Length: 98
Image (cartoon, rainbow, N blue to C red; front, side, top):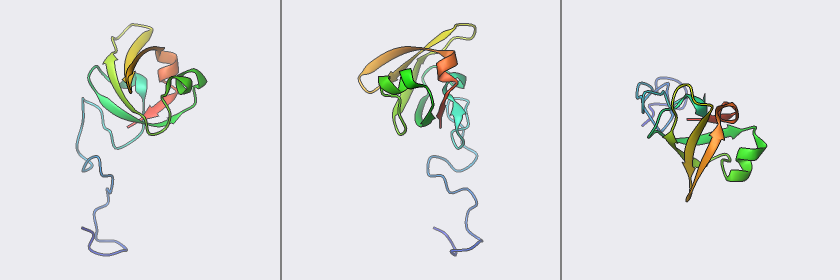
């Protein structure tokens, strides 16, 4: 896969995509706030500094699917595990995902 330990190999080594892939209109190779993603997109939590959403199970490594996120609404609906949660976009801005 890599030509050598130093250099000449691919610069982008993230397994989720090849550096140009876009999923649901969002670049998943870098961490983004959860509030920016649209309905139907599945992401993985990278970091979360919001205590309330941590208690819901939105911790590092959790798979999250955006169920509803309408522009102009103060809240969004996400699914994690077997649950669906309504969280404020203010809280969602504190959750970094890719």
